[in-house]
Image (cartoon, rainbow, N blue to C red; front, side, top):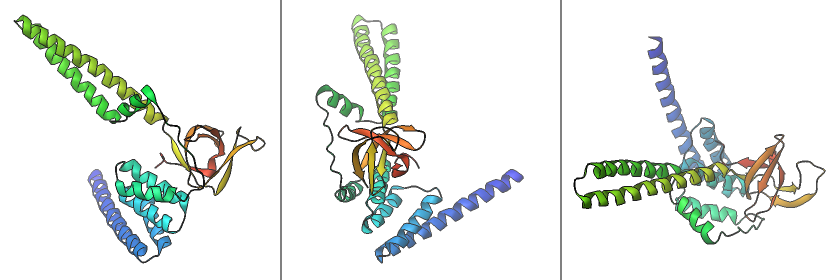
Length: 254
């Protein structure tokens, strides 16, 4: 009986929160359309604080920050929206507009040759997709191997052997790509600089030399964290250094 009451209360509470968030979202949209961007931000962030995350919510929140010329949070939430919808053209377009407002001009180091081709192939599908391909190919191999074993004619045996061998080789290749994709995802730890201006140090302490300076809105890759106060970052052009941890906001954090 107690469990039933708890379940009922949970359902009622979830429905209530859903209805409340819908009201907040509509209210935020009205505030945005009326030019009251700060009020729109407050409504959208109240939804985020309730644990709800969506492309539309991040996109609208980013737009509101963009209207207030707040570069870092606008880029941050456009990036969050892209994490949920990587192919969304509207998000990509608005992100480009926001990035044009940043001060730092950092050119990416282009990958060339076999490395570039390999990375493009691995990134063509998600980790789950590569793993699924591997499983399906193993099943195909098993079925064809049985066909080879029980075939009565030489031609059928030869055909089953060739196709099953190809399937197991492709399964191993897919499994390798799945592993590589997993490694890429694990190493991908982006963050956005939120400080208006921050000095990047050669070592994780205030007494070390300044390697270079970054400004709000710049996207970096996090390499490691030292003593929670310093974070080692890497730029798209290959430069590395240490930044105060409070000056960046991780994109992979919910």
